Image (cartoon, rainbow, N blue to C red):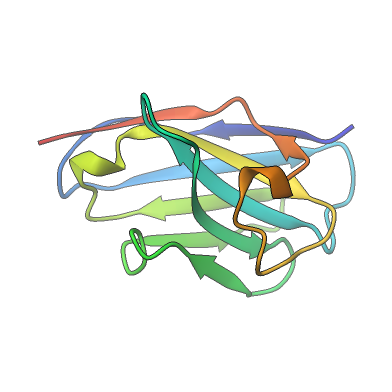
Amino acid sequence: QVQLAESGGGLVQAGGSLRLSCTASGRTFTGYGMGWFRQAPGREREFVALNTWTSGVRYYADSVKGRFTIQNSAKNTVYLQMNSLKPEDTAVYYCAARPNFSLGARSPQDYNYWGPGTQVTVSS
């Protein structure tokens, strides 16, 4: 059974950085697509970024492009490096997985597996 777990959230001042981790277990993830989403209070869950588990294909939402970067490790962990954070980045951040990578998979409904989320709070 696929399990995902995020970590690395916290409180940071505007302009600061955080690195989130998503560790996956339960199977081999070759070919899987990984997504990052976030949800602020009172708002719908929104797409942040996606990548393939084993290649360098990545795609970012316009709101984070140039500030957030996905980094893959060799041990079933994906990192989301977040720089130049803004108060509007405050949200619960989730990683998600789907069996087949798709560059068009930018909706929560496109993903089968989810982590419990980690809170990111950016103070002004």
